[in-house]
Length: 407
Ligand SMILES: [Zn+2]
Image (cartoon, rainbow, N blue to C red; front, top):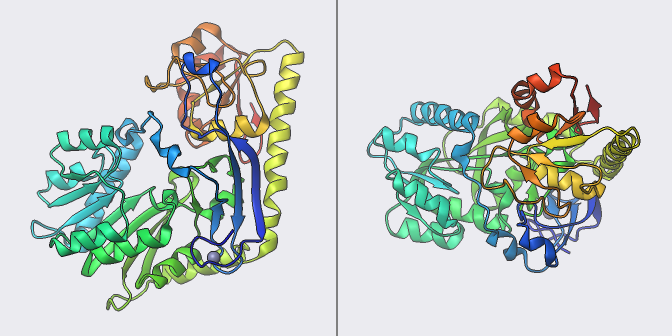
């Protein structure tokens, strides 16, 4: 296998989570009597450009045909994050009625609606029909296509080049990251700005976030590697910010290579920190598997001990990261009887692989389990607050990452 960015042979393993079904392939009761498709879930790292990437396997396209679509507007904190971004970037770039903003993976219009409200012309690119419809209902024009070089060139030919192109949590999800980046270049006006947000590989390693690995995520990115990919496409990263979202993300600011804007100190500082953290050293990647297995073993030991003691364990949050953890650990409903989730689309379905039933949050208050495992650790504080009355009645809470904690 060759590196998806630079084409070098990939020899260095980073993480092997065995085989798992697509993390968002939630099952109905009827599905439980059918066979389930598993794909290998393995990551390698390129020792030339340090791009961490999923191993190739056949029928990657089928992953995106899943019926379940994530609607960004479902998360209040994410909506607030988007609104703050629009306010800041509008001022920073001086965007107005003559400007053009393109968002790649515009989802349900959770972000672009803020530009519509300010009368700044915008365009969404979103291949998922259900979310694109929701955005159109808000008055946002949407192209229902996958973004890449061909679409970028078409937009430029049609006079729809952008002053700002943004992509939140899409860069790590594209199979051909070079083609996608050339698309950004093609659709960007001279003097235009690109902003991309993606989870930071440095935090993934530091915080042991192996459960954020799933098939739909093709790349795990450092600033160093993104800089290389940009450079290769005739672009330059001129600024970067660290964000707390998704366990630690980066927002990179890009421009054409020959843009007069100077590269900020933040870029150099973060590149140095990445190097200091060992992101350009093969040994750093080679050690990660052991850390992931430690969590898996601890989670299993905890669940087995609870079972022996006759205690009940449920989970909260039927998130993709929960599926990665449960499938890696081979947990089934005998050890973890049910999971509650507020999203109606997931309720009365089953977790892929583990087949743990997903129930309405009310159930957790009725059954009062001895332990609640909070699968989306990034919102653990919020969940604990929601379940505070259970804690008063003696329920204890567990989180698995960065290490198993029960309290
Ligand atoms: Zn490479």
